[in-house]
Image 1 (tube, helix red, strand yellow):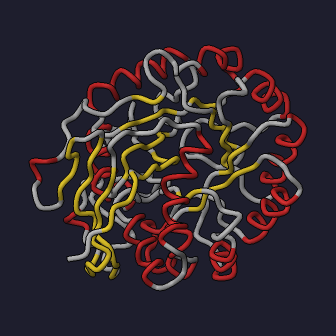
Image 2 (tube, one colour; image 1 turned 45 degrees about the vertical axis):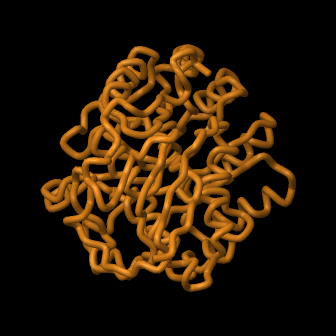
Length: 359
């Protein structure tokens, strides 16, 4: 068996559903899924119930996380028109500010210019701003980056016109970065028809031409591969009003390793997209003596029953992939071993980012 060693991976876009959605996922199950997928640090989104828009809500979520996380976790604060005065206090223990310009599952959406201006005026320049922006909202985000001379990170870019606009902004020297998801790289609207509610997410799956554009820009314009891990139960997906979102923490690395096997990107570029750049973009601390061992020659079928995520399903079930996570070491301790379930890191052994001192 061939073994390759990668640095610990970072997912900058994860929904761990705490507080309020623990029946879908919680900090212990979500970080178990992260470790089994090769991620040693994940950044979780604020559209929880209640949303993380105040210092009190964020500190409550951090306390729950500290007792349960198996790998390192940072929590985003959320932008909200009703809580603009809370931004300064919120920033102290948030890894960044998330602004939703388009549809989101939850109450967070910013539709007015005064709130956007206040976010850019009041959010500390030492902390990043991430945006859910689709279509022309991407142009709004780029304009704000230019007007305020501060970095903006665009989440889950999925369309040709969006990625080409970001490429043009980068060529003009504007401080913008972006991420794409494996489900937008490997699934299209044709799969959405096949999968039904299990293929529904935001942004929605796009045309083949849009997917082709993402792959074309993967070598330069794209900064990060992010999972947008957004678990929902099968019962919720089968309901009359199925919520959008799919799990992704355990399938992202195998999918990207398969792309390496197929010659669609290099292993060095995979490491940049899933480890190096996420730390750079979000200013994350290094994790000493931390690495992931993979078997790149392992070929297998993705199966729902093998998942650690609480929701227990993936739209990629049945797909043949190359590359299996064998072992994860976090700060010198074995945090995951595919051959020994007892080696899973214990709840509470992970660290919060930023630390309790706010750094």
